[in-house]
Image (cartoon, rainbow, N blue to C red; front, side, top):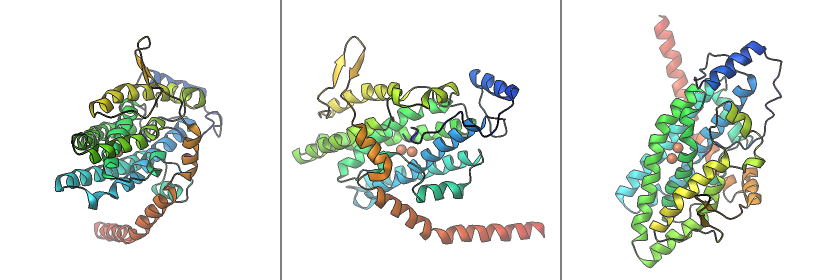
Length: 328
Ligand SMILES: [Fe+2]
Ligand SMILES: [Fe+2]
């Protein structure tokens, strides 16, 4: 999730001309599947593309805690509450790894947080949808984290070392998130008619937003080719989307539910599902912050940041004292 480029940049727009021999050596290393590390020389456009992608990814992890955190106090059992708590904490951890990875590229934590809170930075649009019922929590784990896994598994081999290594751990945790979500829905789908209806309703509301998580289609995604050349991305948005649909449709049917797409059909010749047209207008409206809960999300983040000021001040004071002691 979270890794689709939402803001357009012009990779040609590097600030100064870069020495050709350095560019050539960089491209050769990338083509050779070697990792680029923080101290290595890299083109400015590569650095900026990564800062944008990794920070957007970090913001998405952090904002992603909100719709689910909303249900911790209302989880239907102690077991479900413990699972949900663990998952939401994992997402916080993912955000922190990723901010650290972006810092290795010269971005400052403060600037990144500021960009999020001021509305300048983007995060995954999926978190601007509300979580109305407990079935939504299952659907998020299964569909949203499921789509995230599709995106993030190839990122374990992305060309920037710190990002790739962060993804190894993140992916392990995401697979737990996906399973717990599906497991919660399996239980409900075997329950009362009312529970079954809740599951179908959650699928109806989360299916298309999950499909949109892969970002604009390839002919509308101008930075994709450059990102693939730099091996930041390894598969295009449409390839990942197709993989997700192919893997997920049988899971919908196993739940005894329907996919809310009348055009969905197995295509024997292609060996893939054909699917209906995506409502990109809705996608861009949500990117622009017009999602049902966009304002609420940012208010919650700003409040958490302000409420946590004393923790940051205490940590700074502790560090200052530790240094004085160490110097003495
Ligand atoms: Fe995550
Ligand atoms: Fe997750």
